[in-house]
Structures are given as C-alpha cells and as structure tokens.
Amino acid sequence: MNSLKDLFHPRGIAVVGASKDPTKIGHIILKNIVEYGYKGGIYPVNPTVSEVMGLKSYPAVSTISDKVDVVVVSVPNVKVLDVIDDAGKAGVKHAVVIASGFKEVGNIELENELVRRARRYGMRVLGPNIFGYVYTPERLNATFGPRDVIPGNVAFITQSGALGIALMGSTILEGIGISAIVSVGNKSDIDDADLLEFFDEDPNTSVVLIYMEGVSDGKRFVNVASKISMRKPVVVIKSGRTEAGARAAASHTGSLAGNVLLYETAFKQGGVLSAKSVEEAFDFVKTLSWNPLPHGERVVVITNGGGAGVQASDTLADDGIHLEKPPQDFVEEVKKIVPPFASLANPVDLTGMAPEDWYYRSVKLAVQNPEIDAVLILYCHTALTSPVGVAKAVSKAIEEAGVSKPVSVAIIGGMEAYEAIRYLTSIRIPAYPTPERAAHALAAQLKYRRYREYLMKKEHLINKSS
Ligand code: ACO
Image (cartoon, rainbow, N blue to C red):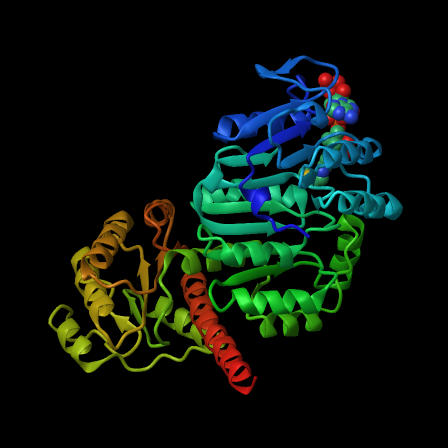
C-alpha cells in the first residue's frame, strides 16, 4: 500500500469527465482546481472535446506524458472501471471516485471490483460517492463545493457528501481555517484511520474533525486515534446514534452505524472528543485550534452578570470542571478596579456597571497570573457599554498580556453582540453567543488535556514494560 503523501502533494492531477458544460460536476471540479490556485499540472480528460477552460483535453489518462499522481473520476459508475484500468496502467497512484451508484445502492460487487482493480496497480481509492477533497497548503480544491475555503490548521473528514459540502460553506462563515477537507463517502479503500495517520504527520494540521456514520475496522481506528490524540485533538460527530439515524446511515453510505455505547467507549479509548451536533463540534474546533494547550484545569470566570456566571458554572460542572477560589493576588488587584459590592469568588463578577476598561484590566490580570490556567469571559450587553468595545478591550488585554493562555468568550445580546462575536472570531479568539457554549467549548479543551495525559501515561507504561 502506498502512503497518502502523493494524494495531498500531487505533481499533477487529471480530471476524467471534465466537461465544457458548466452545470456538470466534472466541469465544476476542474474550475475549482484552476481557480483556487493549484500550481501542479492540471489535465482535463474527455475524448469528445479538444480543450476545456483553455486547457488541452486528453482522450485518456494514458495519453498524458507528464506525471499524474491523482485522477479525479467524474463519469457515471458503469464507466469507472475502464478509467481505473487506464489510469492504473499509466502509473497513477490515487483515484478520487466522485460517482455514486455503488455499495450505497446495493452495488456491492461493482465497488469490490473497483478496489480489486485499483489494488492490481498499487492504486488507492478515495470514495466512491464523494464530492472530492481539498488541501489548502497546495491550494488544491478538487471538489464541487465552495471554492474559497479559508486556509488554516483544521482537517475535516466527512462521510456525508451534501452535509460536508454545506459544512465547507459553514467553515467560511464561522471563520474556521482549514488544512484539508476530505469526502470519504463509501470508504471502499481509504478510510478515517488512513487519513488520521496522514494528518498525524502533517505539519499543516493541528486538529482533526470527523463526521462519521460508521467504521468497518473499529480496532484499527482506536489504535490510530490514540496515537494522533497524543499530539493533536480529534473531534468526531458520530451520526446514526438512534435506531432511526442508523437506518438512514445504512441507505446513505451503506454504513453500519452500530451500537452507540460501543462507539462512545471506543472514542474514549482513542482519546477522541465526541460531539453530538455540528454546532458543538464547530464550537470545540474553535477553542482547540485557536488556543494553546492548557497547563492545568484552574479556570477563572469573569462576568458582568450573575446569571451568566451561574449558567457557565453549571456547564463546567456538568463537564467535570469545578471552579475554585481565584488566586489571592489576582483578587487583591481586581478589588482595586471594581466597587466594594462586587463578588470576587469564582465567577468574578465585575457587576452590571462594568465598563470596557474593567474587562481590559481584569482579563489582562487573569491571563498574566501563573495560578490561572484558562479564562472564561462572559459579557451581557448592557446600555453602558458596546459589545464591540468590550470585545476590543478583551482582545487588547489578551494581546498585551504577553502570555498565551486558553480563553473562551461569550457575548450575550442581539445584533451588536453578533458583530462582537464576528470581530473576535476574525482574530481567532473563540467567541460564542451563550455562556453555556463558551463554557462547554473551553471544557472540551480541558477534557482533551486529560485524555492526552492518560494516553501518554499509558504509552509510557507500555514502553517501560516492553
Ligand atoms: N473518459 C473521459 N470522459 C468521459 C468518459 C471517459 N471514459 N466517458 C464519458 N466522458 C465524458 C462525457 O462525454 C461528459 O462530457 P461532455 O459533457 O463533454 O459530453 C463527461 O465525461 C461527464 O459524463 P456524463 O455522462 O455527462 O456524466 P455526468 O457529468 O452527468 O455525471 C457523475 C457523472 C457526476 C459522476 C454522476 O454519474 C454521478 O455519480 N453523480 C452523483 C455524484 C455524487 O452525488 N457524489 C456523491 C457525494 S456528493 C453529495 O452527496 C452532494
């Protein structure tokens, strides 16, 4: 089996089924490859035309004299095997099979034959039944999804096509930077574990997000996940949790969704953070990819509203994080800022009359204090302050603190609060519209820290005994 290096760093990429018709998938994929800025060789393959988008079109992959590492196959299912034979004989190492009409509709033999043929040539198969893949460090967008993915450090593996494409768009809206997006569809050959092995080694990826309906080799997935989780967090949205969901997954990608408890246990063993919804997963990804790893679990909550503080405390407690009294030197300094009736236990309540400057000074003190590991900042919009003003005060405090520490911010209110959240996420400070979401996302980071320590200890013990 060859590694996936050439899939993500191809010297040349051929698109079989590249049509002049702008409504066809093969055309859109070619357009995205060209327009997103891929610098390797781009080769449309279509015997019925001489050029597509100004690029010479080839009648078959085997007629291309330059090096082609990846072939994107966008012709109907019945034509795929011939393309695999042709590309395989030409020495192509990866086939990205877009076509549907395989295992997901009961065409198991066609899918098995696809993998058999590919193996004959030492070729790996991504798909079938997929929308393609993206790798931003190579400016490669070989999908029929949105073009302008934001480059960043999150790799996103998705078993669902349409949902995956929609989520590609959501990452742009949410300001989440992407290293890779991989549609895995039926996972006939390349699966989550193969990709995790690649992303473990990939210097451009620091967090992996997976939308999963099922895995065929659970043991291998856990082994690989527990290795990568010692270095990089993995978040999984496991769908098909209910009987109805499992039935839907079976007809979608032909996956066996399996017992939910089994999956939850396996995820824990592999150090994987499980998310129940897309919203929760995106919330986790923001803290995990934008914050540094926390040194410990001493969280201080700074708020201007008692209720928001209570909600955040409850959420943290539900997640196993218990708030302790803040360090005395921090309390003494905050006392100099706030009125005498402010409650300075944890949560630290700056009171409803807190202006931007109190946020600036108290957040800076918290970030700088070595006895505090993470800071949760809550702000309820009052007429005394502007949410964007508070957001700017918070970001200034974090920037000037001179220490990198995990933070999470809730800006609670209407339209102006939304603008403040957009401002903070644009500068990669995790910000949310409710105290619960901000607290839960921060807790995910602390949970990951625990998982990581457990996995590292376990590995240390295994190494010692062997
Ligand atoms: N080599 C090269 N080109 C060929 C070959 C061949 N062997 N055979 C045909 N072509 C050309 C065709 O002539 C056509 O070009 P033209 O427009 O110039 O005539 C082009 O390749 C495409 O072939 P079509 O037969 O027109 O196929 P079409 O583009 O309509 O559909 C597709 C192909 C997209 C693969 C379709 O069969 C399919 O499976 N669609 C579903 C894809 C999908 O949903 N994927 C799942 C995940 S994504 C999600 O869920 C949103």
